[in-house]
Image (cartoon, rainbow, N blue to C red; front, top):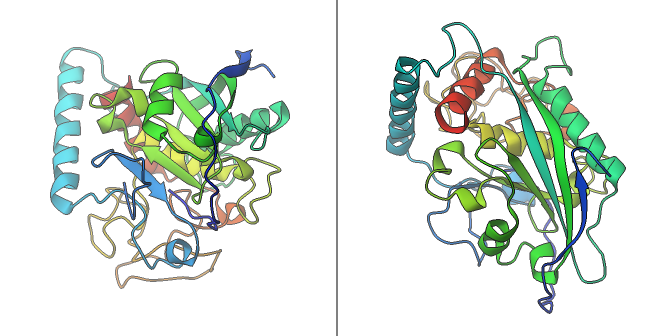
Length: 314
């Protein structure tokens, strides 16, 4: 999850969450849980303000070293079992799939929070560009592409502000475990994501929530190129932050992302926050850099995405 500047919220009147528009098939984790977020929900939060961007507080659901180890062991078991059934990916190959994307535009009663169909199309294009490794010669092509499966618009003051989030996600989520649901809301974060290993336990809330002003052409200064969705989708695929675990060899479970002690703010070329080899991976989509600083997933992140997809979403 990434950071954004918080602002006060006015108590709004709850309205019916009726879908007002639908565009089929391409048409038109925590630092502090939101008050309506049930304890134990496996979301990754990208909090707002200096406390997040400056690295002065946790921003994801706390995953202890023991839980991280257990997740890796469980993933290995699932991959082994699937391989034995002939379901897995051949050794040395990567999983590849087209991911159906459902966009949920959570407007308030006055229509605030809306985005254009053009912005939505541009956001899908950004996902295809970033996961396709097209922003840098050092970037990996993950093999995953994204296709807009539907756009839904709602007028609901509470949902617009991400209130009753577990309820509205369960009521509106579309597709199966392979479908990426993106809820566009107005909250004090840039984004919140669930992890793939939690789908079996809570399938109804699986997906990512994204600050609507972070879409291409939005008003979120330094974060309006659409790469918040890339970052959150990275979590949805099973990637940790590059600074997960801090300056440790285990770190984010990815060998080619150098250890990093804390999130990046901006695009500080040459930043080196750990004594372990390598400069901080400030250009990696799983750091907290400005959108303009991002340009890559690494080859080993691509491998991890493939493994996590095969284990939990295939």
